[in-house]
Length: 292
Image (cartoon, rainbow, N blue to C red; front, side, top):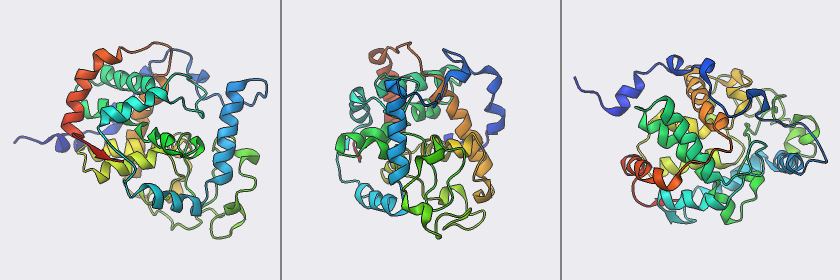
């Protein structure tokens, strides 16, 4: 019997791929994601201010409004390459680990995935495009509604959200009894895929790929959708909202996190030399012009 790509992927046990003992990074692992407060450090202050605006403004109503704005997919049309090249001009204001343009990070992550799992071409492309939703920043979306860690709106905020203490002061959902309890507007074990996430590039790019009928496997789509949901995939919060199958999603997301986080460094990939390989993957999984 000959299996399709998707059937082969579905036969993979993600626990067999999750190998934290061989993480490769260009600096000590405890140096990543340093969100300490230092008012004299311009980078740290930029990051803190970005999260403060995010936590103040990301409400249930705000997210619904962004869905209405962005999920019509009528802002522009572009190939994956054209959209990626826009990221040459974007530096993520929430990221304490790199000040390089986002397209550099895209290729760093993709090449790290390719190095470890050379046969999983869909994983290479997933790493390349995981941040592509950040193109919203070029269409008048403030970075606090584009970048950074994500969290569910409509329920109690996790204690492990970055800058959790005082950062949500003034957010009206915190005083709304419909939204400020453990379950809020959700039912127990409703499933991570049924949460309304804070608005940003993760959810947007997931929706773009679904809307344009891209053929990346579900595991790839979930990596893109939840890769910034650190309170869940790293701190194991919100488990009371999980359903059967969500732990597998988490394992796949944590596999991906090795390339998203630990590939950041000063080693610059040869982007021009790498384009031919990645164009073959784009043509395979996400060809032609996409509606954004």
